[in-house]
Length: 597
Image 1 (cartoon, rainbow, N blue to C red):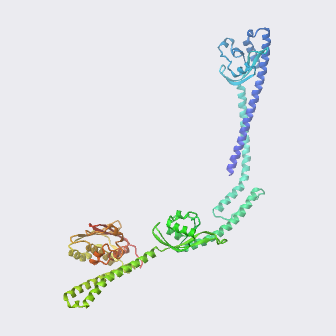
Image 2 (cartoon, one colour; image 1 turned 135 degrees about the vertical axis):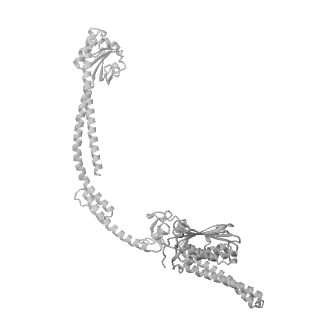
Image 3 (cartoon, rainbow, N blue to C red; image 1 turned 60 degrees about the vertical axis):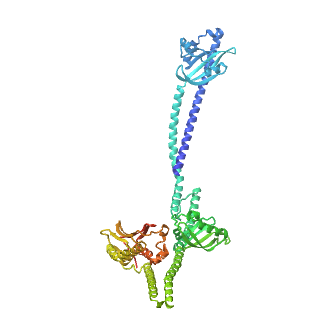
């Protein structure tokens, strides 16, 4: 501010000096020109009087105007030109009489025109004859009120230019001296005025940076002193208010941060007035500056907005569940209530919402319900079959040895099926609870595949299936539960054998890529429809239920495989084409993190 005031002050002084100088120069010039004009008019009038006397003695045409022009021109130090009423020059103090005929007609000259009308003509211009700037005065020559010609006097403006130049120099020197003095005095004045303002500004910056309560110490009996006193009172009040707000805000933030549930509040314009970190994480809000923004700008979910709209307009608060699709599909349980003013409880200013994410809870409930139903169905089918055949045997079929043996074989098959189902359920339960994953050892992949080949080769031969393995040399070992790893590979190969028709082919591959070991089981079986692949690893999920039961599947084999893969921190993918075959690809990282029991 000091610089701005000083620059403004200097510019104003400079403008004042320049204007004063220009006005002075203009005044001096006008005075000089006016004096010259009056002098020339007086001289011209005297010469006209002399010519008039000569014309009365002789005729006007007989007067030797060149002689008079040369005689009087030197005396009055001016150029004298005589012009007749036709505009022809008949005498000139600076041009010889022999050259007068070559001078152009002067009737169009402005001062001559005016003089020929009986008035005194004045003009300033460049003379093409003498190539000099002149001031011209033309006075009509009147004899018995009749105009016979014009006497024109001219003075060069050289002296006036010289005078103007000297005056300009003196004015410039005076202006520079005045500017220097006023600048020094102005700087001191501005510095004294700006000094207390600088102190106030400096203290205000400290307060803005968080140093609340800072004061300014300046003694002054003018408006600056009143400003300082008011500023100090404001600073003290601000410090008290900020401290109180910070204390309340700290308590509020601590409460919000310690909550496990999502919480947010909006006003009646749907603008956020409160939101805790859990709510921001729930709705994937990355921008922390959300206060004052519309709920749709932050959460971007129309379903939640519709619920809040219904609450505000219909005063329908309470408990409800909402399914949202963005940023991801979730089931939320909302507990809502109105925000009311303490001083006016009847006035509602917004809505507070407590949110619980019950997505996993509902999913687990559905899985439990579905699992119980599937287990009940899977157990009921063989038990019903066993119960029916036993009842038939009791009712007399025992006497028929052929029927009895056939029924007992069926009961044995169904019993084995029940045993496999129960074993698979126990295995899946143990894997999910990490009971089988506590044992960690070094696994040599080629050894596992060689052991597995002994069991799977005979199964493949029974269906005339071509079975082959291809293991990359020098595969690094992996760490984990050896039995689980073996079961994973065995389940995938047995599954491929089950769904590959006679004469087909199965190939098992293992290789290393970067920091991962890959296991691939390819078959030329019946393939899997594309729409079934996403649900392939669910418990009891079968693409073709009738065919799966016919070949003895429990519906848990691939679910077990997936959980084993996850226990190794790996992933499994399926590529399949209906009628062409399937390919199961397992990726397991070589460096497996140690899991806590």
